[in-house]
Amino acid sequence: MPATSPLRPVTADEVDTFWRDGVVCLRQVMPVGWLDRMAAPLEEALATEATADLSAMGDGLAAAGAQRTVDPAVAAEGAARGRFRAGTDHWRLQPEFLDFAVSSPLGALVASLLGCPDVWLYEDSVLVKEPGTEERTAFHQDMAYFHLDGDLVCTTWVPLDRVDASSGAVRYVVGSHLDRIRYRPNLFVTNASIPGTEGEQVPDFDTDEQLGATRIVSFDTAPGDVVVHHARTIHGARGNATTDRRRRAISVRYAGTGTVFSPVPGIPRKAHHADLVAGASLDDDQFPRAWPPQA
Ligand SMILES: O=C(O)CCC(=O)C(=O)O
Image (cartoon, protein in one colour):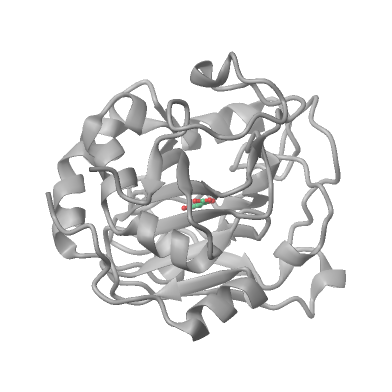
């Protein structure tokens, strides 16, 4: 297995940025050996039941009357339509994903940013936008989906390709982790909230003029970079309609010391969390430990 340690330590400035802005781009911290190791499992993951075709889901929602989140940038005439495919909990099916989540440098990076002695895996996700993908990722807040309560929860976004604004770099609403509003989850390809959930609808920062002064950041990233956002930070992404580059990313979500299990109304529990009671501390059986490293 490649090295467990990051290529360099997280700096004090990066910790400050994470807590001030709700997001930080850690440049060149992930050894490329880990990315090479994940390339084939990622392709396999796209064919498992853990992964869904969100472009097809968007078409279905549109046919039922919902508004899809589609990029204004359109593919050249005659170009093939690309798919946005995404999955969760690949680590349950593929051991390489578990290794990546608990034995790569991600655990150490998260422990440094969150400043806590324990880090557990909550879930992982493969997020691929093929060239010609018109779907935006709707603005959303991860905590709206997570059956967790606590302040030490974050998402690491690990690109396997060079990514920029035109190929679907994630866009983060700076400082949005600081408001304590509880937002409703959506289905990623529409701004409509999932029925049966509670809270406020996430604003569409692209179209809501009242939010014009809001600062949104995104990062041009290269393999080796890792973007980490707080689980309350609102974020979304453009499509990949006009480039000829794939946008492959693995997103791994973690919880730190003191986080407790807290079911979200309207969102099904994960099967492996069926027996957990609200308020339970996280334990290493249901939430694999990512920090400190296990022997
Ligand atoms: O990759 C994307 O389009 C969205 C990523 C995301 O929302 C996440 O990892 O939390």
